[in-house]
Image (tube, rainbow, N blue to C red; front, top):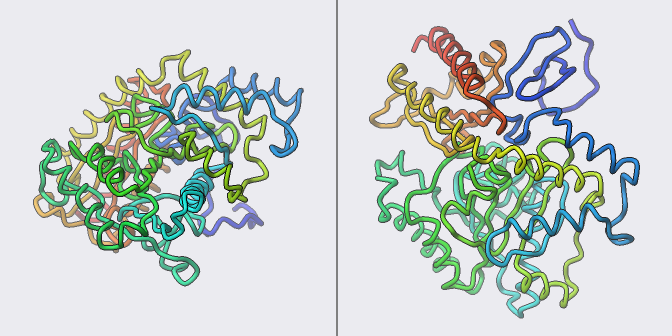
Length: 443
């Protein structure tokens, strides 16, 4: 039995001790191998131990590992910002660095507020988001997160922002390929803006493809363009949270590009640094940045924002995504993964929905596929199936699908270097795990 740990992580369950990682696999100190079927928390997009990224990091270490952004410019930070401006849609060409996704969301919200102040619109302060949704775990990010177990304990410490329903057409029995469905959900944003008072609404933040709280939720036809139009109508900034969906795994570097919609800001992290270094960013339009700088009211930043070592890693990650054609792989291999997951619906009645794009896929378990009623909460399926898969050498990611208290969805998002053989292994281990879970739950 291992000795007690001095590491506080908010959970009592111990895990295996990881000693090595390479490609899509990780090994513990007993020699057991695990297939990283979720890229950690949808982060290790290019796989583990990429030699080119490690070499770029070593080169930067020899030059410098730290420079305060207020003291020096650095080549890695400047070059990475240029690359992001080239990749980003429309006229988004200014980059503010953070260390992670929660910081990026906080920064975007504060940038939006600073812009409103600079424009003489101090009455604008509300950021509308969706329920369910996940935008981070800091207090500001929690205020726009729709996941009750995470937010409720801290409600007295923050101002909860307005929420509209996420476009879960599969639960409402609507056709997601019908633009009328997309308009139905998008129009809820307009109703909320009008109810709150348009003059008080600052921004709308949305995951183009859902992450942890909605499990790879793809918006219905017509949704993304409609919310852009609504935001324009009322002078509301549109923020795309691409912390999970960005980085190439949906086949484009930004998921919003799938619909040709250009937001006012993009938040980015996770696959941006791909697990090699903590790295995040907000990408925004120059007029917003210029107004904020001119007003000198954005007293905000992070010690490791624009860290040269992190930016060198980020540049190398972008190079590897392009050099190896990983976004094309995400489409082809992701299509195979989605097909195999949908086939589970023929074998298991409890698989109620399969959704996603590229190598960001998910399935949801239900007790009744007709009504989409969730499994009994007491089964803790979202936790138990993950543990069984882990015992079988497969890492997957799960959350409650109905706002945190009920429902069970599971994300499959292996690195963009995954092969067809890796998908076969994922499905074999996942099927075996589902069989065990069903047997022990007597479903």
